[in-house]
Amino acid sequence: MLETEIGYVIGKPITKPLATAAELYAAIQSVLPVIELPDLGFADMAHLKGVDIIAANVSAKQMIVGREQPTTGLDLNTVTVTLTWDGQKINKGQGTDVLGDQDRAALWLINTMIAQEWTLEPGQVIITGALGNMLPGKPGNYVADYGDFGKITFTIKN
Image 1: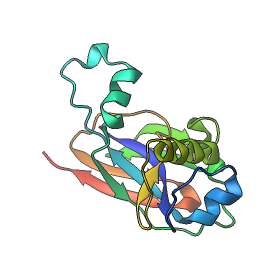
Image 2 (image 1 turned 180 degrees about the vertical axis):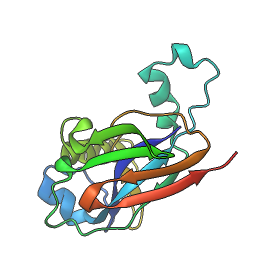
Image 3 (image 1 turned 60 degrees about the horizontal axis):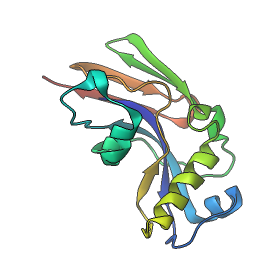
Image 4 (image 1 turned 90 degrees about the vertical axis):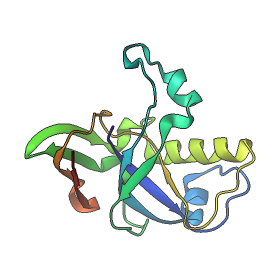
């Protein structure tokens, strides 16, 4: 499976809930485009529900990351990504696809992790959710074009 996402690189330890976007960006080192490679691990995909994915730890497995960028001067809600497979457009998404606001999604994720007694450490990457749809990964050449935010090119082999 493939998801186009936005990642936040933690810049300093986060041990308590964050209340505002200003607090969020004070704790973030950089942001970057991400391709998540989830592994749902369910035999019966036809009956899969959101609660099943949450129970499986959102099925995160691996990521392909793009170039880190500074947090200043970016409005992550305006980021639009187009994913192509062997030259065919197969997905399009934008920053607001996740809870309507990237900062709100990042704050929710961090605060949920803190409530579960996690500490977020410098260098760790959190991802906020899929921009567009989750798609099956098929053999071929992919380009995730995030415009000015960056581009990720990758190949899936048989």
